[in-house]
Image 1 (cartoon, helix red, strand yellow):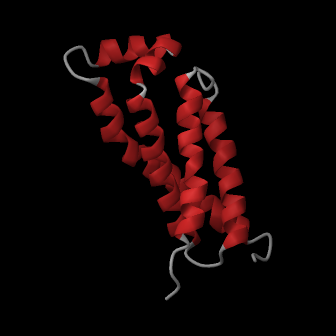
Image 2: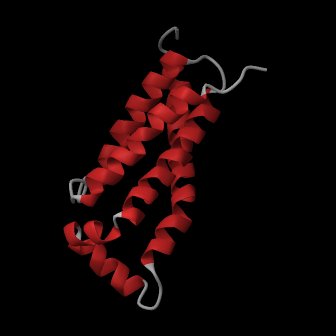
Length: 134
């Protein structure tokens, strides 16, 4: 059984932290989904070039860690996020009038990251069909 390449998993998961930082300043406001798709395609390409085994599992782990990193950045700097994302602030106020929206972010991030990971894993498997990895 071949082991996971955790170094590449953690390196590619930094995209989640980068997206979290970009979201703090409102840079992802209306195009976040498109940005995540581009990152998923890039991540899948790099992953499929770096390993030949457990591509789907690698992608799943990257997605979960990326989702958690995204949530950690947003949660740690939540006031900055709300200041630069007024529509999100309004949504949080209406959805969670009596609770802390940071709890919702932390609670849902592994699930959303898991969905993203399934996409990255599937893209990685597909990308591996088009070239010979290292």
